Image (tube, rainbow, N blue to C red; front, side):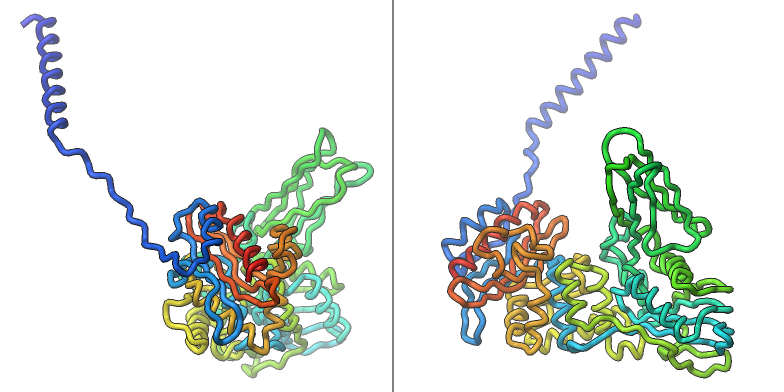
Length: 502
């Protein structure tokens, strides 16, 4: 058959096949489009005046849960919507952690960091190791540690001829404990993992200071031993822009600062979390010991895993050592104020671990801390499933709660002996903390005390509103939706409505 005839036949066959497929497709039933059935929403407990406020969020009604209830044993809810559905709590989970801590630990609780000597001091020289045992104080600052080191030197310890050993006895953690929380990165210090011996929460501050002549100066806080600073900042060109990067090389780490910073640019502080708590504290402790005037013949060693059951380390003879010096944290009310006002995740996670039974005499585990919080929640009159905490900060998407259960806790807390410490820890609308720039000129300013919460798909508020009538209301409002940030104005409008109409 000629080649052109073969080509014509192939075209005819292809056209026929296409027509046959088209005919079959025409006869085939259209694919079914899945029908999404939204959960039924009971509007009966939401005042008519609040329905437009909820609608203004532009989100499905089932994605919003709220409850508002006045104080007093006979008070009925002023407003409720989806109050029995569990929602992701985000940072309003800190409300639960803090309330449990105030009840279980008491207002005078302090975290303690201990220093032990494994040998004698002779003419200012420690003929052994200086062992520093962390006790879970998430707010230990480099300035505190440098002062503590200076106090040691005033007590006769000027040189360490052995090593400085960093002992993290207080917490026993596994990778599984962090399974549902984001990985920490240099750019996200708020994702730092809990640790028994943290310093500056693992955050390195890089200060860039303009100089009248020549390149700007660059300083690190805390001072980091054996970390090279590469100052590559130019004074030429327009603008004032700088950024810093850190290498993770364990042997020769480096902080590189680049950009443009002329004499008119002033000072800027860059914040990063470049290394693990272990590596960070090793270099910072050595830098601070030397900055305080001390000498070190050995090195700083990070002892990550507890190797004993007792909080007291043992000396060369196997006998338990007695503390040489003890550093105490602020009392609990000051700590929870920092946690709630700034939404401090690391502080909340360390606080949750500190609730484990027999802590600090026994190393805390996350499982034991969860069990104790669950038992405490049941004692508050809640049922399993009402509120679930995983690490106490709200970073975990496993931390969920029902608006009704959260309001129940808030109302009980209002009547407790620790109510002032708790309320004082909450951000105040339009005044401070994470609410400093919200509700700044409306009726809620200065009278709404609320913990905020935010994840990519969550916005939340939980706390109290003192209404114009003089009544105080417990409020919880939770939004779970991929576009949850759109609901922020509606949440603020809800609080302002309570302040005006409650």
